[in-house]
Length: 476
Image (cartoon, rainbow, N blue to C red):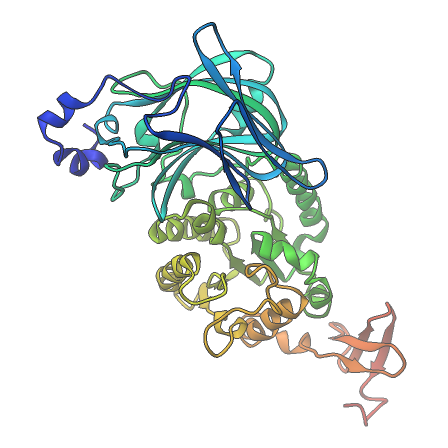
């Protein structure tokens, strides 16, 4: 028996197993007794009462479900979606079902036909409570199945289970989730007490430390290309880069809304930002193992990621923390002389009781212990983003997750004292904007490494001034 299910199955009596049907038909031409088919996008939901239901979206987008004949005696459901961040076909409601008898050796089986998915993705989900939703990603194999007709899929029911979940009263035993653009059909959805799986699912206990690309429908087209570009950038900078930032979309934002701040604070240090939108700890790890810091020798590496682990998977904080720790270990192997500045995951959500912010806070409490204050240093600047009452303002993070330019300025200034301590000779490169009249300002001061007393002043308009302290005694 699977050890992680032992505690759950121990509470089931032999009569419960005897009462469990061989098959639990979730959808076989119709949903479970008194249940319903519901479609939804990110803003609304509709219940299917006839042969079709549709949620129109802006700019010719749509989320729609219709019944279609799969065979003479079977009805299939077809989910059609376009320009959808979230498109859902759910079987829900009715009498709650007990899925515990299926967790040990049971499977979820269904027939799937993919007509179009070149610009979309799929996942299968089970909702197991108000704060409990479990999913199995199926993006890559679903795309591979496009145009190949009906296929019979079998996945372990335990793919949807995590230690501590209560699967005794499930009111939403199945969801087909689509993103982007696609047209897919399902039929004969059922749980069986036994079966041979042909669909793999990630182990929730180890996924955060298992290197992998970010294979989401919205990332496949650009993720690898961005990685290759970063390899080229790293090769060009080489050992001249004094600081490297490693993270997710928040770090990627240094190239977007944070670019003006970056140019003032980190461009003179030949800094590089290795941030990828959507990345979780396992995706950062894949990038590190595939050359993104090779050839660099920065004085400091700034790490800040993990919010996509908690946000995307509502992951156990211990699991996310292990993913962060694994990346630290990888970075220490590849950059043994680099000091690591590990930042606490930034606050998200408007209020302190936001569930995802609380998960991040628990992660931060764990990773703070990774600092040895010799090679690894921990810094929590989260309060710098917050109001006195702990709320997060949209003036700093418009979507309550990603900073705007004002937010990046807060980040840079809050981190500056610690970063200057970790950068040898950092005082030579610390600056604030100094007006030089007209529309320009001095953006940085750099001392000559070969001539004592010689200083170069960078300007925001691309020029540079040479200043010899010996010849200009009044310089300040």
